[in-house]
Length: 265
Image (tube, rainbow, N blue to C red; front, side, top):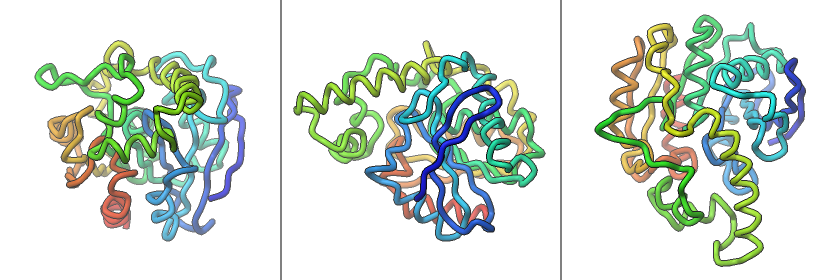
């Protein structure tokens, strides 16, 4: 995948990963809570890029993207998503949005604002809803090793994807903590103290055909949330994948790519 940087009208500077045929159907991947991890595992994006023109913008506050101080709340981040698409020249192209975790929350809000501008929508382990009987754990209280435990079906695999090294290495742990604090600072504007910004009140507007994909072993957002998304969305189909927790794109990239391609056509 190639990488480029763009600036939005708001003044944020965003790194975008890109791959696939330039004249293919545009598919926008909005990454999850922990970022893109493109340097360690981008199999899912590579598989999509065999068929589609894939673009994966990095949120301000993550990696090389900057300007997070300009975004304060859920509306800001939703409009930021549309600003990125405008900078890419895709607002008239009805791109497909594929949002994972935090990115799923943003994608759903973007589609609520302008459903006619979204071709199709895929929500993978999306945050954004709240069930009192299935409360979502407080990610802002997690110790470094707990991210893998809560996000992955295989915690050892989680440690490898999240850091690329062993948490017992001091320098690696320090690097992770610094980058993670910045990421969570951005995510906290949408998720703290709980990941509920009344998205459910706006989902009646989301008339876009939607695929909801969930990992059967998701400990962060249990499968009950997939059922709730499917109940609230006017045009939704739900699919569950075995052998995956919250990080479906990294644990089951082949299965997820098949489901997404089958849905997008």
